Figure 1 (cartoon, helix red, strand yellow):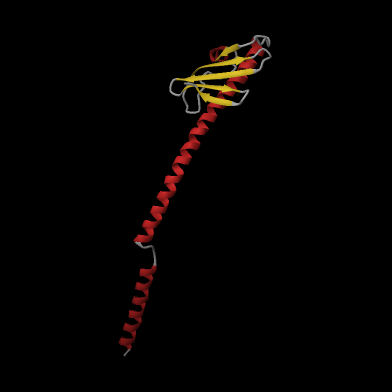
Figure 2 (cartoon, helix red, strand yellow; figure 1 turned 60 degrees about the vertical axis):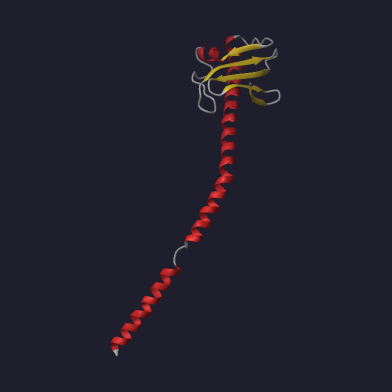
Length: 154
C-alpha cells in the first residue's frame, strides 16, 4: 500500500511538472508575430533616421561655413586693419597660411571630407555676404547669412 501512495505522489509531481513545462515560454506563432512587428517598425524608422543623419551632416557643414566666415572677419580686422571693401573676398588658404592661423588647416565638412577651398565675401560695411565651401566628393555649398540659407550649388 505504501508503494501505491508513493507512485501516486510521483505521478502527481510528474503531471504538474509537465503542465508547467507546457505553459512556460512562447509559441512559435507568438515569436513570429513579434518579429513581424519589429520588422514593420524598422521599415518605418530607418528612412527617418537616414534623413536625420543627412540633415545633421548638412548642418555641420553649414556650421563650418559660418566658422570660416567668422575667421575671415577676424583675418580682415587683424591683417588688413579692418579695411572692408565692397565684395572683398578671403580665401581659406589666407586663413590657414597666416601666422598664427585664423582657422585650422585640415577643415572638414559634415561628411568628414576635406574642404579643398572656401571663399568668404564681405560687403562694404563688413557684412558677411556669403561663404562658399568646396569639397571634391560633396561639391560646392554656399551659405548666405542675409536669408540664412545653405544650398548645394549645381
